[in-house]
Image 1 (cartoon, helix red, strand yellow):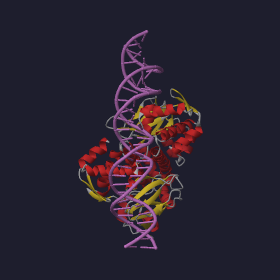
Image 2: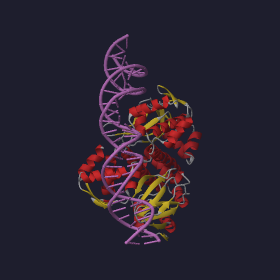
Image 3: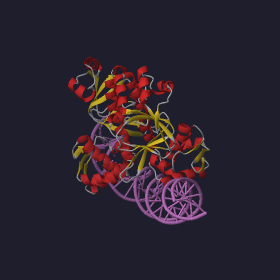
Image 4: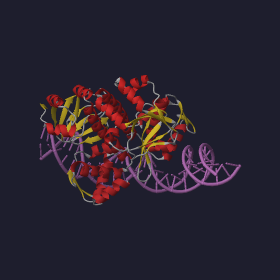
Length: 228
Length: 228
DNA sequence: AAACGGTTATGATATATATCATAAAGTGAT
DNA sequence: ATCACTTTATGATATATATCATAACCGTTT
């Protein structure tokens, strides 16, 4: 499951680690491993010790928490080159959320103490990392506020537009999640999500075919998303 | 309004900047200013350019966003030694939220580029900062999830317990916020908050005298908070 | 003291949303 | 192919919550 790093160094340096010194790039690539997961695999379990700093190389994953009653709450859906490790990574010893694969995914993982070691010695890298981690955390906080202020119609319109514009960049796409998972992300019930999607379909805002969605009236969805 | 630094270095080094070198402590203290604000003062306006990195020395502030309709959404309430600057501080050029004083407050501010300069040169400090900023962002995300999963009774119980245990460490305290602000924090209506508080009063869970609250039945509130 | 604006408060009502029940369709395992 | 199980779907109903209306109260200004 784990293979040696095959990232080309160019990508590494531009996308993430512009601030690495040459010897650090080598060290990083030497130590980094890629791990492949299939759709549905659990990648990280809440409560596990933190071993790696990791980011998503390809695929799609969800970050979520499970409460005492066994109900899941999805924190966010992470796209390629998002960090799977959030900020807690340096202040916590154990994961505070679980991660699982929504699509077949490849993660790049590097030993957390090595990561800390490099950050400790290289302020520029540390800053770079802080900027990136900060942007991710910020995005999660913003999105959480955006969802909170909407009613059910606005929430569903919001997430459809997020998939269409933010993730797949297409008016037609396959939902990577079940209606239940959408509900867990939006703080709604599964039936509520299904019903709202059906209503959008009846109003000819979208076409539904199982998990395949086509946005028919983008402007109307935008209106519902920003109004509701 | 702005005065020179008078933090004693011991506090500085232990609470925040354990990792500073001696010359950095001097530089930091040389450049740092304290700013005093009165209850109600707006400290930072959403959209303003980021000039300072700052943390709360004393008092209580709220971080919030104002939407197009003029409605506020409170992101979090920050206590002394919380950072007022969240993670965006290094990835954004402008503030993405406003900050105002709930109580008379003193902020410690340091020029953002100086902060970046020190972080850039001192990896250990940078790591330390990242840990602290990470913990704050993490707390906000966690709290947002906690609030989201509760119904109105659970939400109000949750915030009462937060004030009692998390902030004032007392069963009797003065609410630092209006009912409207509680609503803005919990994603409820003002009337909903007032009504719920009245119900708690009628059920003898709390005593209300204006903004003064006394927790009478802590266990029941805990039950409502974790169940609802 | 009076007038004003905001906050707290409560009731009546409307509406949004969840819950419950049921069923069809899809999915994976044997 | 059949079975078990989950997901999607829809209707009926219950419930939670918001909205609207009104009023008392409080602090501030005139």
